[in-house]
Length: 555
Ligand code: F6P
Image (cartoon, rainbow, N blue to C red; front, side, top):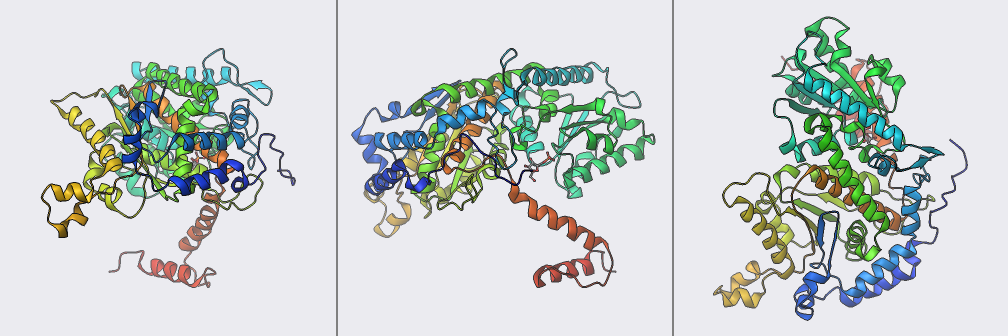
């Protein structure tokens, strides 16, 4: 890599906190932060209709936020001052906006329709993208019609995806989210953790003869994935006792053909992607092979159409009507002016149970950065901590803190007008809870109201709700592959919007390297039975020695 920092044409150089819009937002915050949503709604009967936006089948109600028209105007001005438009264009046109890795960032090319052009370093990549999709679809058909069989001639019934981070969270989230559309005559499992429990539990009740492993790793050097892949290879060979079986029971998804073949997988059984696809932005590339096998090529394509619809909206809509931009800017408002620390994502749909975990990597690995694009330390907070669970379950665990705790926690509520599983009035109950929560969080219940209901004085403080707790409500008609695509792209682009405002590289992840390097060294030390003095700090040395003493069951 060059010793000179790369020039990033679209990068902005002015300090964020010196920008006129930032300063104006600071002052504006002082003026309005005590305003209550009760007041805002009372003053404007149309508020619940005005502060909304809609695109690609997603309806966003952002009226239950601590904002006025002026807040929105200033946030949009901030986006403009930070050259968001230029950065969006730079991303879509293949500029190397991942500057620390000197790469283009083009997950949007993965969902471009055939015939569109996306140029990376002078080459239109869309035909390659569609060629891989075709191969994935052909492979899926072969599994379905039994042309691709296991080594002993049995049909493949079990698909096990081995990968971690973006090579796991996207596939597992998409499988769970779209399970309704999935083949019920096949099992889909996901092994990520190097803790052998993950692998053992995934394989304990299935036959190697009917099992296909998809080894997903962009780099094909990730130690956890390779450890699990080697254990999978052994598991297959222990049963089938012929190295030729590997061909029929392993395929790989990677950008690294050399390492794939070093592992022993025939590159003919490899599905490729490209270094301009970040791991956490890869679920609709070949990394989504398990998704395609689960839901079928047509549904997979419908998901890509959903992604693409949101991409187009993000690229073209004015900022004040642009869903990812609005969500991103509202996040900035709470993170940087209200100093909120976290954001909760609360899907009212059991199928989206892994969506918050997926968003954790997307958001925190992208924007958990402490230096700007030019390497100077930021003097403002960057990524919030993202967490969440499906409703209504969360209501019976952590919502207490969201309603009455001392912290301000902006929440995104996600719901669907139609259920995929009609059963009595369950869906009305589910959605009633979603609407009730956002209403309760915004408006609360005053001491006077509590008292008027007959509550004794001493109990009133405990039973009062301050309210004024911000929420976004994201409503779509029905959870379909298309909708999932729009939802994921919505969050991808809102993360990018925030990274642009914070002037950081949202597409690298250097922060994971140190722990990886240390673990490599420590595992060797743990495996060598030597009395050589350990050279870590006294805490790490003592822990390792204790582990060494007790790692074998004591007789
Ligand atoms: O360690 C972090 C990370 O590099 C993620 O960014 C990535 O999604 C994950 O590891 C897995 O990487 P790979 O697909 O190369 O195995």
